[in-house]
Image (tube, rainbow, N blue to C red; front, side, top):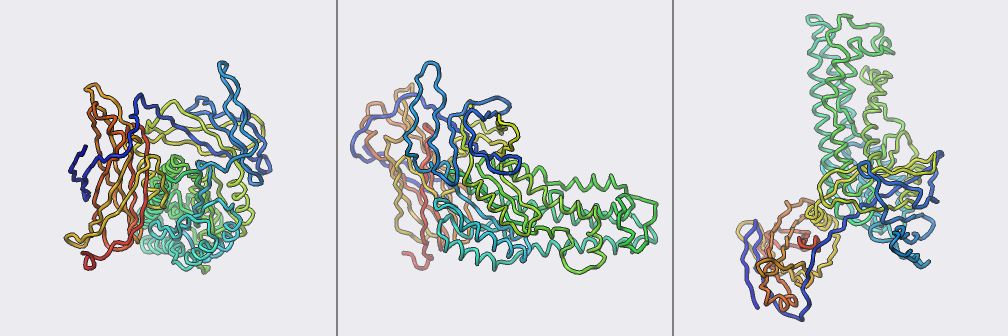
Length: 593
């Protein structure tokens, strides 16, 4: 039997063949998809010490306010092999299940750690980065041998500096390279000084004819707040891209975000400056700043109005969305403020009027809280930890290391499957006086979205899984019109691995969807391209066809240079996905034949 299908989709063309090997029975029956929600929990006592002696019955887990039954419970400790998973309590109609043998298996793939160190160069000063990287080197050396670490940076956009690895030498070399990259935190400090200077300069220019608190003072504050807000949103977007790339990575994912902080209300300090200047603030210390030259009491801008305007630039909703996105992808966020005890806002050097304004208690408190609240939000909502106000972070990093190696792994099966809705998680511990940290929710992704996640993990990080036993073969490259090169790819899929079910018309049908993404040597990722492939087999030929392979040929038009290609084959009938990843060097058009 031989079937041909021609298909054009974007830059891809395909042919389909059925070619024979041995026969196998077709799949019949109804598909039942099982959805499992994993929750990693850290429990500490009043002194902050990890508690690792709790049992299954000590926990209560609720989804959207309704209690759920645990299907999985495991205690993982850093100083011992993971305990065998305890079986769920037997129902009255079933006998008790014997416990697993004492020889515990290796840590399951769903519980292996992938740690991402994300150095936010856009929001980081060079001397702060140098201090933190020195301490991070010791932290990374003490991780477990099975842990994998990735290094990434934010340099106006997200860049992977070192893919996941367990090689200490590769980590050390990559950290050396990161330390040489430019940072932009000092520019932010200079901008803060300049906004104070512009407001004070404008005040002097207009006070004679429009009073000392003219509405004209709002213009520089608004401009500064909007510019800063766009920079924060750009940083959130870069972090979202990183979280997206991790979505299909199996197991636990912890992201350590290193920065001087991101303002949750960009430009709020500029509005607080206006409050102080216009008599609506505490006035504590402002007499010393202006040598007793207090402003006119004819206030034209109220402090309440100013702070309402400041809140108009809030990015709380954007940070909430990022945290929810991290929870949906099982990424725990740890945030480290590299500025330590020096985060006062007056860190641009000098002791002029601009610096003295930032030394006002009200200005300091708003500036510091503004930078830390966003980092605290991200860590709290995802079950991580935030590190603030520490120049020596060794003990804090050691605490994170202990948490990464010691935790409770719980799982349950919700009643819904792929409803695309956000669900809240609540965990209670029956022993009093304990603090519990965990991700506060998740989004139940549809099956196609999970397939897209796995494709992203393959194109960014090379992760593969192949339950459908798909094989991939790349053909000879050919020159095309323009600057692109044609790369033929052949996929071979065993038909007996696919869900092909009987239909009322007497045929047997299934449906595949191919997802293709590419990443070039500079990190640019193509849009996800999809092709739907319906399968239909006459009833009298189904047994014969189940012993065949489904050959699918597609052609990618790629730019010369290094290219990473990820191809996912998603069987819609069984919600099973195979993902393959390949790296190739595409020859320049002039060198192709």
